[in-house]
Structures are given as structure tokens and as C-alpha cells.
Amino acid sequence: MAGNTFGNLFKLSTFGESHGAAIGGVLDGCPPGISIDLKAIQKELDRRKPGQSAIVTQRKEPDTVEFYSGIFEGKTTGTPIGFAIHNTNQKSGDYSHIKDSYRPSHADYVYDQKYGFRDYRGGGRSSARETASRVVAGAIAKQFLSGIKINAYVSQVGDLKLAKDYQELDFSLIESNPVRCPDPEMASKMEDYIKNVRKEGDTIGGVISCVIQNVPIGLGEPVFDKLHAELGKAMLSINAVKGFEYGSGFEGVKMKGSKHNDQYNPDGSTKTNHSGGIQGGISNGMDIYFNVAFKPVATVIQPYETIDKEGNKVVTKGKGRHDPCVVPRAVPIVEAMAALVLADYSLLERTIKL
Image (cartoon, rainbow, N blue to C red; front, side, top):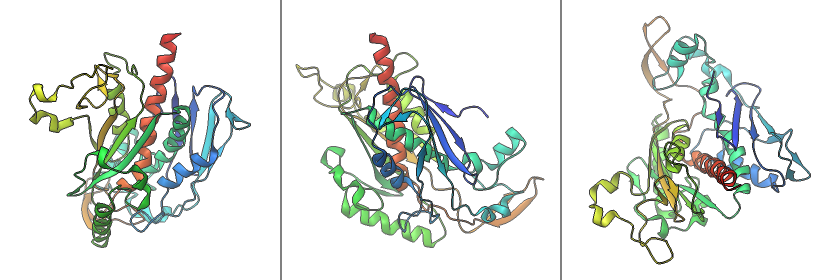
């Protein structure tokens, strides 16, 4: 299986399956001498881990990361950083009913067709549990990107949409509720909605917005390696993501060019920021902001029709412990992937200037 590595200079390779012994990764290219706060890394993992509230999967995993290389006396050595997170609460029996059939909108069918074999326990390699490794690497990238601030938050669940501009929000409130929405009133509505959807044995999708501040001018490489293109790739590599837009996005098509153009201030900043902090594929010093759309979780706890390996129609029912809405736990994943992109491009910019 190819495609297990992300990045060019700041490079992450991940390994492991949902119900295997462990998941983990190797982070290569991190410069030496970076002070590493292990508690901060674990805190990021705790934001993603299952069982943290009543609106997420109740799988109980401590998600404690263990480092095996690349860090000595609290600093990076410049050598590959190897780490693992051991799985401790697998219930593989919850998936025996899909051993010979395919869950709709999962990777089951295409894995079987492509590889002729699949790990049906929780989806194996296709499980979103793999993203825990990304959060570890992203937490290290955040510490490398000193001064750059990355804040993601839930801005929509189903039809419940936060209408406020991000500049009106208090990011310190993101972690004040289980939905991770910085507007307490909307967060309460979203939480109630997710609970009701769960009672129905169903799931719902949502949107995560991300704001990156204090980005220096010059990150990004035209023509095919534009900064927003790499951010889009990073976000679309996350399980369940169906859409990515940055800056004015799809709403920008409603504007005339005379209104959409970002006029300059004397210092090179712009009066507006419809460009989303990126022009010509290169960061311009303004805030980078984007939205990531997540589909409803494919596993529903109610009867559904599907097919087995022989093509016969069968009726089965979702089992196991699943998120009714993935976006609350995906917030740190979005931040991690954004951090990995910026770390990679920061190293590339250093190389160019040498």
C-alpha cells in the first residue's frame, strides 16, 4: 500500500490499524534543537481521543504516546522522531457481522477490490484512528512554528451554522464545550442536536473552520505547489472530508471583482482579506482562513441494505462505538494537518534562502 507519507522536507509516515497492536509514525526532517513540550503533545491527543464526552464514540482509549527516537533531553536531535500509541480497548467482535459484507460509504468494498484482502475490524487502515498519529506530528510542528497561531473550531453541524465572522469570536472559548464551538449559545444548540441524532441511531455532518495567524509573507511555491493547494490536499486527506474552501470560497462568486479585490494599505497589508491570506499561491501576511466540510459518519446504528462478497443483497445493522458527528474530535486533526503544511513550507523557504 502506497500513500502513507505526507510532506516533502517535514515528512510524516504513519503506520497501524484501528484494531492492531498500535498506531504510530515516523516524523523526519524536524530540525535539531527544538524544545519539545511532551505535555502539550499529550494535550493535543486528549482533544482527539475517544470517550471524552457524551457526544462522541465511547471507545475508551487513553491514547498515550510513547517516543522512541529523535528527542533527547527535551529537544529534537534532527534524527527521525519515532513514536507509537498502543491500542488498549479494541472490541473486534463488533465487526464480525461485516466480515463478508460491505458497509455503505465505507472503504470496505474498494479495499477488497484493490487489494483482494482487507482488515474488517473497524476498517483497519482506513479507520480514522490513524489520524491520532497526525495529531502527534502536528503538535510537534506547532512547537516548531513558534509565533504562528492555528485555531480551528466547529462552525456548523447539520443546518445549525455559526453566522459570525471569525474576527468576532473568542477563540479561548473553543475548549469550553464538547462541540468545540466558540459561541456558547450555538454550541448548546449543536450539542442538543447531536444527542438527538444519536438517539435516532443516525449521524450528522458538519464544518470546521480554521484560522492561521502571524504567517510570514512568502510561504508557497507556484505553480503546482501553491500553499492553498497543499492545505486543500492536507484537509481532503482526513477521513470523512468532502469539501475545502479558503478565503471567500464559494461565496466569493456572488461578488463583483471591484468588491472582491483586496486593496492595499501603505505597509502592504490589505483593507479586506477575501484572498484568505494567500495570493498567487504565496502567503501575503494576512490571516489564512478556510472551511472543511465533513460528511455524516457512515456507520448508522439502524438496519440497512447492502451486498456481500458474492453480490447478494443482505440486510445488516451497524454495531460498535461510533461518533454521531465527527467534527468535535476532528478539530485538532485539522489544526495538525495545517501545522504540518506550514512546517514543511517553512523549511522549504529556509532552503531557498540559503
